Length: 253
Image (cartoon, rainbow, N blue to C red; front, side):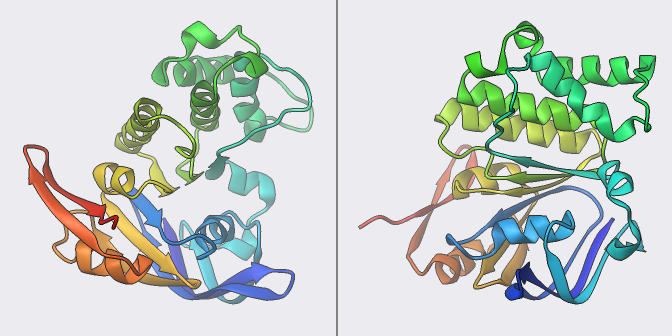
């Protein structure tokens, strides 16, 4: 689905990611690392939103250079933590915008568009919000609207950038649970997490990025996680075993 070969990428001539080799065909991949490590740039590279200076990136075995923007938008989408629409749209109107990629030069709303929007709203559980103004709902609810809009877009890959940031524990779990659900529906999820425990609890695979390089790429069930997390963040971690299984936390001193 996605393959990166020796990729160097960045902004305005500045290299941020260095010699990235990565491949994913399915599943839920969590991405973690220190602030400024290049996690968001990793997502933006896949979405063709930054410059690739060296190396190759393929989506469905086709070079990213061969995709037109609209064609790419039918395959993947980026979901970030903040959306500031210039008009005070309703929740449903914002979810409907997920269908823009499927419209022609002259928009023609079809039964399929209506079906995908309704499916997205019901899947993410925001039917009760659809007539509310986006500006009048909570931060946690706004993040759910962004997920519903991505689902309505009917893409194969969803790139998520710290969608759980600044949310309470319940809303964090809700966001991660819906991402897991979308993965089970057949979508590839690549999600940058600020919350390490959340990433380890919901992802199938975890990538650690530091100084623009992939430091490790492991299963979330790997016995090598603690050692690699300590290298990634430069602090000590502790393993705790309970009835939910093994948990790994930073050891605050």
